[in-house]
Amino acid sequence: MIPQSFIDDIQTRTDIVEVISSYIPLKRAGRNFKANCPFHGEKTPSFMISPQKQIFHCFGCGEGGGVIQFLMMHEKMTFVEAVEILAKRLGIEIPHQSTEKDRFKNIIYTCLDEASLFFHKALLEDASARPVIDYLNKRGITLETIKKFRIGYSLGRNTLIEYMRKKNLTLEILERSSLAISQGEAYRDLFRERVMFPIFDIRSRVIGFGARTWRQGDTAPKYINSIENQVYSKRDHLFGFNFSKDDIAKADCVIVVEGYLDMIMPYVSGIKNIVASLGTALTVEQIRLIRRYTNNVTLVYDSDKAGQMATLRALDLLLENDLKVKVVSLPQGFDPDSLVRSKPKEESIRVFSDKKDFFDYKVSILSKMHDIESIEGKTKIAQEIFSTLNKLNSEIEKYEYIKKLSFTLRVKEEILIAEFKKIFPKKEVKSPQPANLQTKELFSIAEKIILKFMFSNKKAFPLIRKNLREEDFSYPLARKTVSYFLKNYNDSTDMTCNKVLGAIEDKEISGFISKILLEEDIPLENEVFKSSILKLRQHRARLSMDKLKQDIKEAEVKGEKDRLKVLINKFDKITSEVKNA
Ligand SMILES: [Zn+2]
Image (tube, rainbow, N blue to C red):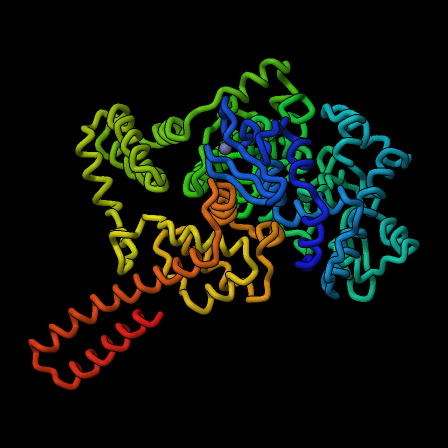
């Protein structure tokens, strides 16, 4: 946790104009600056920056916020990463409120880093590693690659334990870093005589290792990996991402492969937007990581049966998470590593760019498994394809693919659609029912004034809390914004500066606020603010009076005297409240 006061401080000391101008050229426009928006393609600038308010907003695509939001969007960073960058720029340390757990985590990071350097040095310098270097060279792994990926060699014979002892890293830490294991009383190095691939997290910290055998005819398992520990869980990371993330953003596409060398070999041969899924089926956490950089995924798994099944599973999960998926089928018997090693560069690049739409890929796999001419085969294929199409969120896409399927299977479209609907009946989507339906989508001038006032006058927020509820705002984003502030801030918060804006992680809210603040000026007078609050309260009263009138009528008809009394009392109370407000 970074203390809020520190985030405030950093923002106060940072000039948004300076930061943004280091990424894109800015032009003066009166009190503000303008630029072509970096978040959507445009030729006439609608991207505005206010030095006074320290915010930006694009009137074209609606993105907006403070300097932290700009970095988060432009550099695809998390909130914390953006704060770290700004702190670094100012040359100040982040005062992490570190707990015992954090401290221990840091020791583990140190330990893993030390270990990776130890293994790396051993590979490059230890005499016993000579044949390993030869082996790696034969596999096309050059010295340059070894250095780039910090590939190493574990000598075994407890050399790591010995080395760490000198660095004052205890056996307990080694065990918790999954570098040593205990055998009764004694401990021994977990990795022995293996090629070591350090696994880095996205911030290039070593979090674990993949360890590979190298001797011909070795009967031990080909790979062993770090046991999951406090800093490493395989479902949260992608191998190679720290190296390739910028290229992924630039290419707006990521190639996902399975193994370490499947990532490394294409990467060094120039296919740089690539990551490996650490020997697991692709996980939702990994997909979230990917989505920070791109929405386009190309799967390149082994061409064998297991690889095909893994591809089909990954494909469904990606579609379900709204990513666009393509698949590269490698020639029989190849994986990405062996392909790059055995084919000329141009040909590998050609194979990697020969992408199939997920649909065509799945159909081609299924038509090998089932007889596409038989009724039974057609049914099976249709069912399998349906289950994938059902993951798509767009009805148009679903329909377009069903049309394609109709052509492939030579079954009428209507029949396929009927069948699809039978298997996946559409769930009734319940729309939320606000009381005031007519005004639901309208952002009334009163709501706008209240929000604008909230960020310009210190006294506004307590008054809003006292007089209004979030339901009083009918425009959905206004309601969301007010609810966010009522929940997260107290009345003493000063919202008149950019500090508050900088703390918002929700893009929708920050874009909305920057828009209100940069829009044409509404007169910000106390009286206007107060009358706007009154307007919302009167509106609320009117709605409940309408409801009461109905109830009263009902009670009259049914002759419920007691209830009628209560209702009329309520009605009178509200009426006088509105009059005296
Ligand atoms: Zn824009």
